[in-house]
Length: 80
Figure 1 (spheres, rainbow, N blue to C red):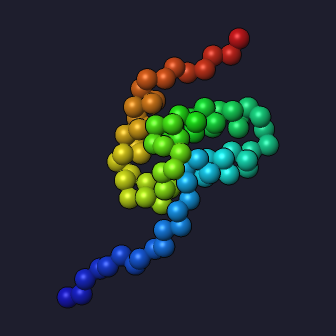
Figure 2: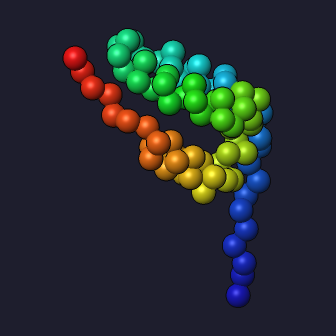
Figure 3: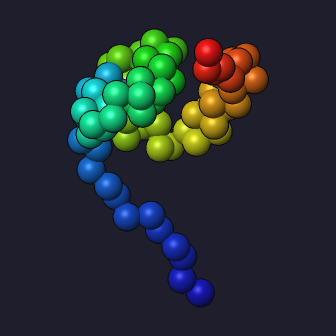
């Protein structure tokens, strides 16, 4: 019986801070951009701006745990 092997994928070395900025630059609506920015600014601060985005894919539990932690400690926005 054969074995399954993962094909190697090149690591491009995209910094988390750069990826967050590129993602935010895709939004035209100011409110949408601000909502995503609030989470991404904290993500970059907690993981570090120089974190290689490709390496985060290998740590899904760490990233999911961060979202769980942040979601549990944040409050919903209220409109006035």
